[in-house]
Length: 540
Image (cartoon, rainbow, N blue to C red; front, side):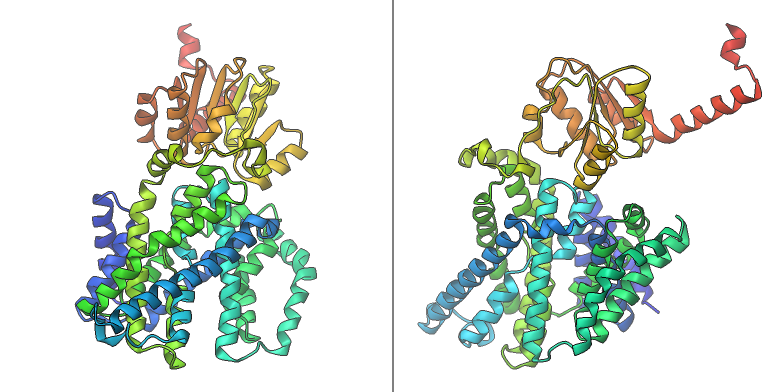
């Protein structure tokens, strides 16, 4: 059983972070350090919870991943170049610090810097080159931007880094996967059978249980049994299920349980080690070097035909160290490559980078707006096709967000009112599916300020409907429309009653609450079918 004090600390620390307008995960990290100071250790149950959270998170990433994303040059090329460049950068900087310590110009905590050799330098540099899959995906999901252009780029790079991690783990342990691992390729032709099984599960608890079985048993368990990293197995099983229409529904149904389990992961980071002041100083030094790692991301991504917003926001989301650094550190310590104190330093650096990155990403859009005029101009003709601005054409109405509500609005405006409608959605898979069904739809990120520069140039557009699933996205789109003096009408859909006043204050002409409108339409339809006359009709 998990310690009650762990649950209480996670809740109170998350609450404190929210009060300070910080992401709750910053509070969970702080809660882990607090528990560490109070003398608590990580328990087997907490470790299990943390591992389950990470495994289910990777499974849900796979459910939303298009394999072709990994084949894009900006993904595999960007990830490879960044890893190589950052390893060289950290080796050079840490080597210079060792030289300064050797000359006596700087004190070395516990002699750690002075004891660096080439093997130690390479291992540390490799550990610091990774960005955190768990942290980045959690930030993107919080903003509902995993399918935005920069979100897909960041996730693709992270998955490539996970593949590099598997290669390292295999090489460092000296143990090759079992010959039976070749049998894993049989999962590819078996994928249609897995999707048929998902077909039979419906939309209730059996669908979620089926997802858990595929992630933990067929994914993690099977891959571990043949000597391959289990987390990677969960990711691959998710990717095999991704083409199924129910994949998105399954991902949403598992969202809350995955989020709850990940609280254990962030607590466990803080419980990893109890630092001394000298080790904390060395970890802080590694965090101070983090902007150099971020600069490498930015410079490399700019070389692949990215718009500035895509490259800047992807860079900001990747500006952290990875929990994989802890795994590298543990293997290096057990192999005698690193002093045990380095594991404490790496643990602290990872945790501190999460805090710094959470604060940084809370202001990412403002940082982009400040940086954009200072970056070199981009030739639009040289942009990647997936990153080019969008023309509206002859559309008279635009629906932003083509989920279930957006599609209903689109059909109604087209069939009942005869309008030429353009649908916009950031999910390329949805765009392709709807285009094949005859929808006039384009791929676009409505929370991208550059997107708006060409989005509404046509004077024919009379109406914009904000039907995106996240309130923050609708608010951003509304602000962009207002700042560009859009002359037409704006209608927004909200999920929660408390969101109505906020969006009305920003100038929406009409706001509809999803459940109220559904209830009203259902009541009117039922009464009409029963021949009941409304009070308004009676008075009229």
